Length: 497
Image 1 (cartoon, rainbow, N blue to C red):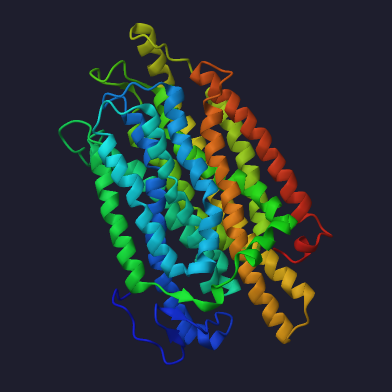
Image 2: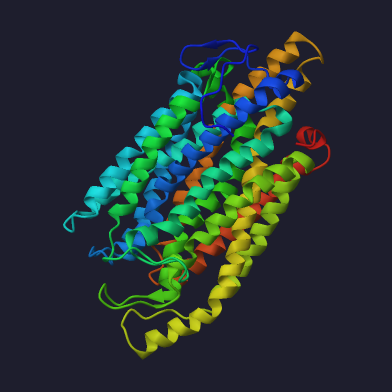
């Protein structure tokens, strides 16, 4: 694929600012001759920008575990809250980010949203080098990292317009997976960049102690690259332009809220578990008495990225399976897996020993005993991540499928009314993508907070309590999916969404 700006196709009407006025993805001839290459190019750079957004969004998920080693004295409760703050902000700004695509254009907003990543990265780079920085300042910086969470909603809303209905599941799955991989990448390479840990002895950590600012400088530079790439290689679509009132009309569609509930269970779980996993491993399988004393047990930096990696690569699989078998059926299977997975985690947690705070023989014995359980804990957790990824892809496939079904049922075939209804359905589904993504991402805030249950003082007991709550929630999601979208006689079930 060439990285130079392509020549203008004679079959396209373009305007200044890389606006395309006659985008027709459902026209087979247009798609094969003109649309597909343009859509793929926009998808490629959308993935890149969204990938960076996710990396910056989750930068605190790993860096928080290294703050103590860099000389900051924060409690586990404070660290879990730092991890949770970006997820809350990222969830709340997804709605305006989605609306921005319809107002400013997908290419234009990609440039703006990528540029905004300089705020959390540059502020992070400065303040982590200041040992006297108050905790409240870190909370504000962590909140700005939430800008990266908004990139997902605008990116998905934009790509939804580029592809025909038969390919939306796969395209949206690839777009989302590329972004989700940003979580795994930041969790894998941040420890190496900052000097915290290598990669299983194959890659050495940077020398000279812990320097968290290094990672921030790298991602600030990549954000500049993303701005330039969007400027030169992406496009705006005129038929994606819409007013805010029209977009917000999806709030009156009851299935926007049903799917939002289900998306809390899939994406909320993915982002919440990804954010909390480094600290979960650190608190239950690893211990460091002080910044000067080497840790004992399982090093969280070696394994924290695996969950996000599995959840990311299985997301396009969920979209592909949804294209073939229907999103609702695949989502039902995903929630079944989540129920079984969380029950499995509760089983492994019952085998763990609480780790005493004071260094000594009892602490060493507890860490060693828990290390024997870690492979089982990790294996079950990766199954959970796989189910979140599959569920993410299948749930997002359901969004355009529902609005397309509404348009088909309301109009006659081969009529101008049908064509207009389908275009309106695409606009509504793009708006719904943002609303549903925003509500779903709130799960990313709730999960770390639940692991830090204020009514449970001991970390292991808090973890058990949290997974009990999660299991009950997934049972509810399973029941809703079956009752609303899979039970025979239901409109959308009969339509095979």
